[in-house]
Image (cartoon, rainbow, N blue to C red; front, side, top):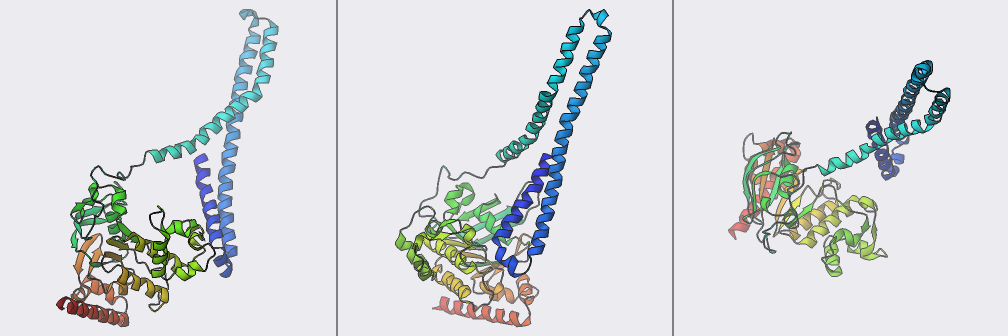
Length: 419
């Protein structure tokens, strides 16, 4: 019952937290009544579970007291009837009956406290369960790669498979491919195809099978910090922490203020930050709520620019920005990535296909398998190809635009290679 009460308590706190974060949107959309009804439903469910727990607690203590009193009274009365045979005086029976009456209250408290102890120990039980979780790989290894690694950013996957737990099916199946240095790789596929899982395998968020080489170094045999510190990531949902802007840009204090200002200037946030009285030390609220979604994404982009790694992973950096291709923030992010990371190996998970039409090659995943891997233009020439079907599903007009983009980028790249 205590576990049930704890389970019904969590939704209340989650609902209150979500309501406070989105309070302005709730009022603007006139959804206050619905959120109040949801809160009442969560509260009623918790109240019912808590009342059941209290009732059972009282029932347990009273039941124990009742049966124990009945037992002792029965023994005393039986002894009183047989006192001549036992040879005890009436005074001893009176004293026993008096002690029995005075023992009732403290005994009830002890029984109730023992029940409370057993129920409250469920909190310790839940904490102890975390100590039995499977541990991640070591942060550092005995034979770390050179500090200059990786110099080229070449990535090779050999029979890579992945599943998130031992009792689930594989989400990636024997993926083998070679991503050359400085290539721009687009990763596409339908929902559940394994796009994000491929990035999770590369970053070892879950331990994959097979082998992953970056510049001939097997990343499955080095420490997690040694690997993840060399790969820049711009997530789909920008991640910011409460604290100063400088702390968000440079959590480990590895860069100077000048370098931070230069990174902000490249993403066109310098004027915004300079207009704040605190400058680099302006406060960022929890999850960056005092910044717009576009500004949060630009902060993550500035963070990646600071790292100056040769490998960049993008989970569609502009997915949460205005979908209008001519939106200034969208164009700024796309152009900054193309110019600032032109000498890096870039892996982009595409939610909007037009963002990867200028990629060197495109990986097409289907049900965790690599089904196509070639330039966008060549993939579009395949009859009944997976990539071509994805493009056709965007609509006739949009598909024509995408084909034109792929052809233009193909001609541009061919002319550049010819020169």
